Image (cartoon, rainbow, N blue to C red; front, side, top):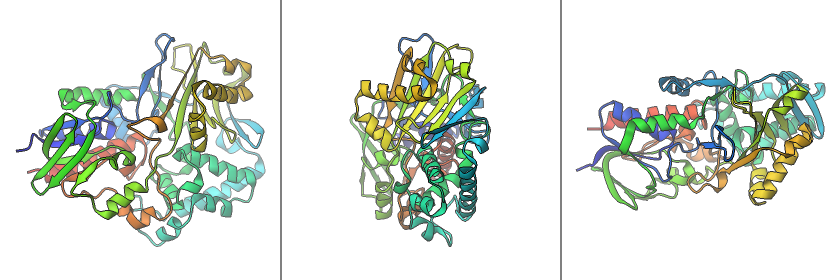
Length: 451
């Protein structure tokens, strides 16, 4: 006899939404989480030594058109604050820095024209991508047979234009464009409303932050589930047959009618499945490496960059931190710069050691903001690649051939095993909004299948 109706593996946003919806339907559910906390790739941390200040070490931003996550935030009374602030942003390519207040003026005229024509070509290609089934369509095989880097070299006519698209790839996927297929980049962009939308603050993917931190969403969801969320229980084995599932952790086995695996693909491969999964499913998750991200926060007594009429938003093609945002909490008085170190830069930074990594990131800030950037009140960082139960961020990406060869296995249940997580979302794939929608989908699947 089953202990519960449904077992959910993973207490990130996707897993908790799945469990929340199953319980709301009157069915029993238990969530098994390897970490000692809930939230997965959302994590809000208190800054040591700084009174009443916390930062989002994980997922942070919400877009206006991310209705799934916005509905959940509103449900729990969580408010947002705009990301865009007063002052000019900075863009630096090949040693030339420019101040700007709109994306159209971030680049010199020649580069702007080059990027513009390439963006139009990219958008036209994305129109051919089916977000529900990217592996389908007349153009899928062609797009999946090449890397995004090869498309950049073929499409952009200026060196700065090529650098710009490489920077976009790192900012969106946390990896270099030679590592992903053109089809995957097109899919992610179309999934999120367009490539420009993904890298825009006001009105775009970085439109707003959650006051008090994004992890609160997971904490509220978990509170509603109470004792049915079990922490520090990494799942080792899932046994499944026509009668049910048996999910094993160090504390023993839990049985259910159905199981939903919501952990990132790199972690799903560490679970033993008996009997084994179909070859296409196994091959798929083996071809879904995560990006590499070190997220850093430099905290100052005040946002001194406002003295120069700067917003604190910066992009540069020189590492280690190529993307910077001002994430100062409204009304706190503190100045907080969030520095995203991504891709190969993140791997190199993680190998430097804490002190050298801190110095490297602060020097990058000081190049544009002056010597005051070298002396923060506090500096905190989170290397998501080094996290045992994450193994990288922001999400997984697919190299050439993966989508068209085995991508159709992404969401298909294997017997009584179902799949959720931000990577399985059709819309806003890889984002918190996608995690929410994937949990809703998986819950609907298991509820329809339960006796």
